[in-house]
Length: 358
Image 1: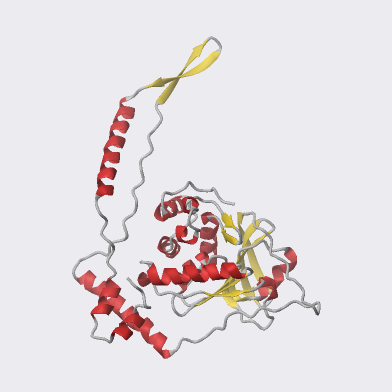
Image 2: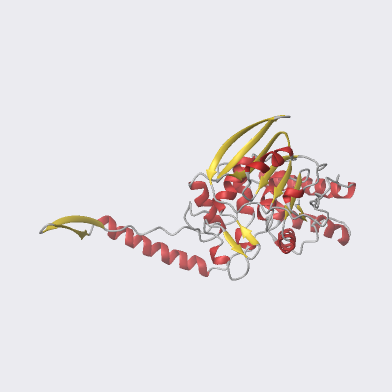
């Protein structure tokens, strides 16, 4: 499933295409997509396909097409502090983007059938926290993943504000999914080849809306144990943050606000990371058509506009080549610099920076 938008050269280019095609429509969703490089969730050797609007699968590892994820993110209507459950959390790509919007006081849980994929997701999450330049620009709700079949969730599990299911749901499992949702919550899942948004309006009332025609592999049916019963899966606990963790969140928030105010007072605008410039496509020459016998034959017709376009393209290519030769300055991490300049023990600085190495 996918192919709705043209391929990008990099992550920003892909997001530009998704915006242009109206798959990404809100600023918070755009920021989350730009902050998480889709290519980081591909295996080495497969990254060339990361910025195409196509699904990708290798063994048990699977990523849906970018247009699907963007429609899901928009349909969930995410807000800071909400609880989110990802049924079939896979690589953790979607859950990580969701965590950037939920913020530190949200709940971000995922359940995935394959243990090797959960390990892969945890590795990618650790890499994002340790090395991504985006981590210090957001307040993050870290996802927690468990292994299990989402059709075996314990009946006494807590409910969620937002739920997404990344596999085809059969009609007889629809009510099972709805019960996991809080009143006022939103569930997004594929039912009968339609990505569907379901709003729970009351204890026994729901409103549904079809979003997009899709094709998903169906949910895997649970196996029975030796007693002929299904094993139940416990979801991660909804733990309250400890005082130490809360202190880190508020210290980082205070410093981030201080930096923003300081820059504003100096009239310094915060620079967004540089985007790769799109290369202008060369237009085809204008054709005229002439009759030869009974056939209509196209004949190229040169125009001054064509010649000017070719000259412009050459100039742009030379400029792009010159700019590519200039060494790129690494972006400054102002929050980290501020933390490291504080008169604090090194161990506390390390804690405030989440033990990041840059």
